[in-house]
Length: 166
Ligand SMILES: Cc1cc2nc3c(=O)[nH]c(=O)nc-3n(C[C@H](O)[C@H](O)[C@H](O)COP(=O)(O)O)c2cc1C
Image (cartoon, rainbow, N blue to C red; front, side):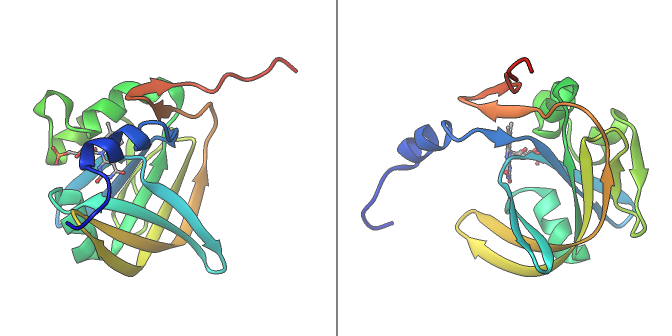
């Protein structure tokens, strides 16, 4: 499409963006849906909002569009296996992804990870199509705080913060 850089160069550039690793989860009838996502960003405190970019090819993207709700679970360092699982490693998909992890239900019946560093329940307020993805802006209905160190992703690998000794 037009001038500009190729998808490969784009990926090479984006690999240098350190990302915080989250699981974006939702519900599709009785089934739960979720994917690993780093395209998650704070939008505004007034009203408290956050955006996620979800690939249209995922069941999670479709289910968020249908229910109008999603949860964001911020992963800790020890949750690397869960991050791989929710990225589709080993071919695990749909409800089967939730066989691992301490999953609970929020007030709308959406799954949240009990030992996440932090998890949010959101209501979709805006939706924009952007190529292969949908950008959903959600208003935060509730927040649950946990503890631990965040899991990061950069140059195609999971990483930890290198904290200076105090
Ligand atoms: C570190 C990492 C970050 C990712 N970030 C996103 C993202 O922000 N949005 C997205 O749609 N997919 C993202 N993905 C890909 C989805 O996790 C993957 O397409 C999905 O889990 C496939 O699940 P399925 O096989 O059940 O459809 C990411 C994958 C990894 C490993």
